Image (cartoon, rainbow, N blue to C red):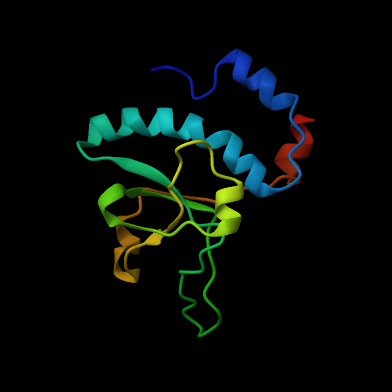
Length: 127
């Protein structure tokens, strides 16, 4: 299989200075799109990276406020799309994949959950 990022893309990434997580997610979105097309072919249904960074949908089992992972891998049919004005600021051309799972009970159907950090220890180690 092809690598997630080509050597040129890794070089481009190393030259980036993201001001926030939204910019980081925006840069990675087309790369995930390419990867998930291959995953979707293997699974037999379309999986997308749904940006839920500004959509509070996860329930706290202890009664606290709902929270939100930055993104989730989900079958497109299980997503509820809702692009806020702030989402639109960080959308790539043609990208409308912002929102949350259509229902809380679908949480067990997620393929993966992403949490992005601009200034985490991994990022600092890369330079």
